[in-house]
Structures are given as structure tokens and as C-alpha cells.
Image 1: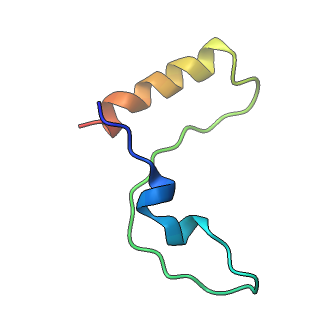
Image 2: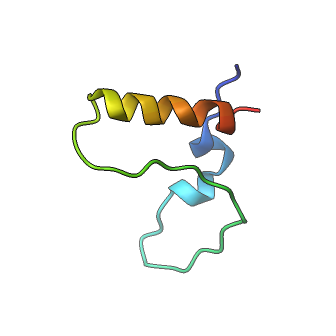
Image 3: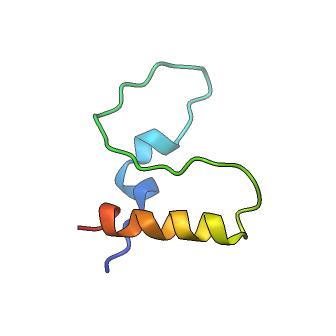
Amino acid sequence: MNKIDLTKLYKRYYTAARQPELVNLEKARYLAIRGKGDPEEEDYRRRLEALYPVALP
């Protein structure tokens, strides 16, 4: 699996100007898990593992 460095690929998204400005971003798809509690717990690990088959083609 190749590692993608999003901060290099989309540098303009990750750098801030000295003055506030509006930034137009491209359309994107995101995956997220919802919950609360300790990320070291088993439930978090299971949810995170469930994202990998969907996120990585």
C-alpha cells in the first residue's frame, strides 16, 4: 500500500494565510466514525478497522 501525504498533495488546504480568507475546496468524500470515549478501547479499534475495506479500494 502506498502512503499518501495529503499535506503535500493539497498544500493549499493545510497552510494558513496571515489574514483570514475564504478558501474554495474541491469536492471530496470522507469517512468518519462517531462515538465518544477512550480511543484505546476495543470498540474504537473495531470501528476503525471497519473503515479500511471501504476506504482502500
